[in-house]
Length: 382
Image 1 (tube, rainbow, N blue to C red):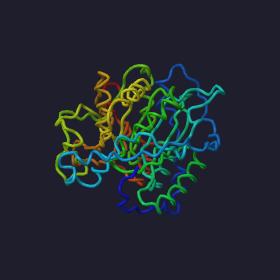
Image 2: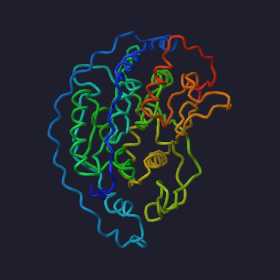
Image 3: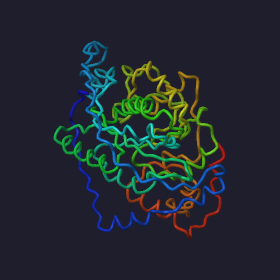
Image 4: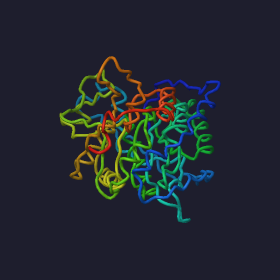
């Protein structure tokens, strides 16, 4: 996508002597909390991940040319450059896939279906975040026979020199972990909707049997066991789309805002109800509905609003879940510690974690001597 190549990226280095030792501590046993919730499943251990297969050469996709006619839109010349570029290229929805994991959800060998697919939006440079997720809440394992699998959704860095280096890094990660989906488009905030649409295309083609999908950013903390427990007895062939509900809002019209959407992009002053894009849990049924409806809806640069538009078109509604906090945790008293593992022990997902916090909290909620009373009651209602 021919967006401007203006921003600079910093390459983070996962540097901490002894970090691997800390990560080793995270091989925690989550069997107990599922004992009462699982009635029909066996305790089959997670299989060792198969080495990733060499992806076939990407299919030839003709380059998508800009729509020069948008320059005739009233006020176009006064728009910020990134919005001008969005308007020029928003019709482009097909891009070569640089990295694929075609066997992530099994193949003709009779592998059981994926119960929960963790689909994590990540920028190429965020190696540290991805690596910590792999060792904590995103670990691929079986929860009493329920397969949990992980994917990172990535585009390309904006600077060409950085892109060459980071693409090499992503290839190394893919070879080692088999969990990277990468497309040849510029990874930017305004292209998050494109990333979402491409993921749903991949899901429909490669993993149509996934029963549930947790879709979120790479700076969230997830209590994966709680997510499994929550959806355990819910039908995957019924509508489910839960997160932190946002309603009765519209486009931000202030130019200084990261979320600025002018009239030329979205004429309406109202958005449909949607869930914050930091973390959303959906059923396989709803994921397929979104894929279907997205084929006829123009891209909007705000990805979580776009998902709300797809639901609205299908006559479905998003719902709120008390255990998904995309704006962080607010404790009921200033005397209590906001990083208290007893709160996170009952949540499903919390947004805006840095890697070391993810590492610490994952270890804390799996301490064998952690004793917490029931405080939030987040599992049994939406």
